[in-house]
Image 1 (cartoon, rainbow over the protein chains, first blue to last red):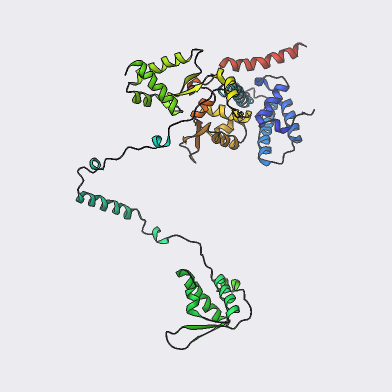
Image 2 (cartoon, rainbow over the protein chains, first blue to last red):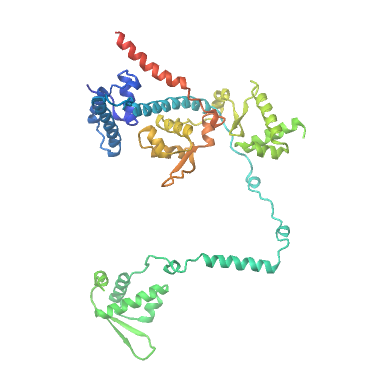
Length: 260
Length: 189
């Protein structure tokens, strides 16, 4: 027996179960578990969804049904004095609750239809009125305040602020993203060198903005000296340093730098 | 203030504010105690009920707001092009009714009743300002508790949460009887 309904029609396993119960015209309190489980399983097999989340919800319900089915198939323990609880009870309660909310939501829908026909007016208070704030009377606010008292308050605020700082953690500071990388800078110097061959170290530094860039540029020059792409010269002490680019290509330093 | 003047003042307040105003604020504004103000408003509500009036005062959880009467809708859409209202899908209505009746409620509890994941539905209801966070449950993970908003009351013409359609216990019995009868019919054949 196939069920000619698409998955989309059901909101979830409870919805499908309710549908099957209605379809089979059975009492919710007396679900013929065997038949319903079979139909339910058949339906799941026919499901085309690949969505694991949805599928698993339906499978959990199937497992519940099979569990109930097997419990009902087991012979009753005659020796037990108290009556065994119907394994369907919990499921029935869930189904009834679900059915009830489905019913309530229909009631709400009717109300929404009516309420939708009631119109409201937006507030029409001019901005200067709604945003008006009474001026603060500083004289009365500062009444009885002396300079000494103000100073005490200031001190205590500052102290609270210092107390708040964790002496160990605060030293870690913030980890900031490095804005200029050494390899980028080296490449820039190489580009410059290819164009100009000889250039002033001072001018190179002057072209940099920020302390960090100057430092990285300096490191870059050192690095290029090390691999022999530039030769530096200084005529006398404190004189400008001349950089001569002797390489003839841009060497990719990225990997080397990582190794350093 | 003379009683007629109080009415006039309240009318002006409700008209200008265009939102639900708490009884306390109205009372403070007109310089009357809360009980007197409530009486005046109730009397005004009766007067607005006359068929010769097109507006009325509604109460929303102890706050008051002016709005048009339902009967005026047909006339109003002729003069103003009211955008078509998008009514809530069954899924959203179902979720909203669970929140309305069980609030404050967590998403897990909603899902337990519906038997399906409900993130999407809950988020949509929050987006439509029909549901909102009302706090956190004192349990592991401190899950968010959801409840309904004033907009919910307005959208469904409900005065207060106590005024929600009652879940009739007889209706539950009806559900049971219905299916039983069907079963009976089937057996008779």
